[in-house]
Image 1 (cartoon, helix red, strand yellow):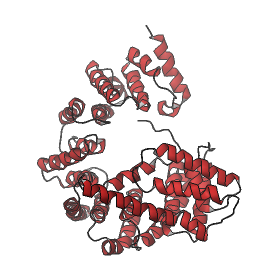
Image 2: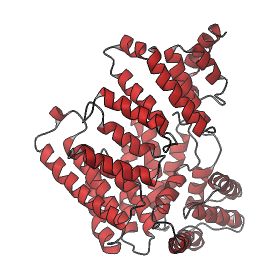
Image 3: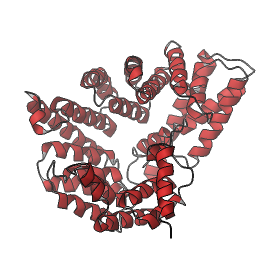
Image 4: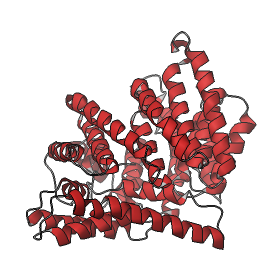
Length: 461
């Protein structure tokens, strides 16, 4: 799907999702436990946001009221399941706008303002502004958790901005790693926050084996000392050793693996499997455990039944998990343990299932995208989409997806592009009328989009 760039904090939804996974199977006791976790986390976030602002921030009566309200709203976003996330984000943004308009010079309030503002930014201005505020937070007396997130967000944005910012990106990555080590060393931090921050940093460092190892080794001791019986502790370890294993193997074909790489790959995957199995013993409601075990099985290749076991466990937790489906899709590719037919069979299973929803039906489209990309030349790739049997699969997958998810209009872009490639003009014209706000970049720019629209108009009946 195309993803329009918004400055608002879409990542907050992921934070809440991982936090919800801490709960035990649903019952009255679990509900009370979850309520207590949310209250404890909210209190901690308020302490390290508005509480810290009152102690070490650049306070002033001209903006204190709006600043504190913005920080408290941000604390709520960070602390538990909420149904009005978008509304709360906009409210936080407006309050931060008000504080900034009153002359607020505090770096934490400025950071929240940048993360939630709806104002447009010129190219690279957002990255520059975020870097400046990260520098100020890193040099401040604010808690390490706030320094970590500011540095991490700056690093992520600079990576998106391109290679001209590589040196600065690594600077902020290292700053985030240092600050996060201090966070993990503090046993008062809620485990949900430890889970979030370690997971994000490990994901950020996935393809940098040196920084990946450096970070994990810096947190492993305090992680197990402070939270030895939390499933998140073992989940973090499992995630690290999966990525550490692949960094030893490399991401190319088997004949590109460096000398000694296979032994390191096997040893590290074994460690990852042991950690994730322990995480599953401690908590069987967190879908990340079986999803990561699917990646372990991809590397170990022990048994198809083992893959199916973990896949079914994941789908049992969330029948809409396209992430679990994608892991199985990798497994059944010809590059691993399957065939072209296996891929299409699984894609059609995803479409036909009466239990699975969300984006799962679109795995059939993903299978055809994979097969089209393997055409022997550009002409073969182009011709692939014109096969009527292929279009039948693609169309029925999209139609089911929109029946299940009528509000997911962004995916109309994908549907339109595939119709264009397949020269299915009636379907293309219909999708063009349903696009809503157009993301021209998805189609290669406005000129390419206009060319497609003109071609569709010539075939309109």
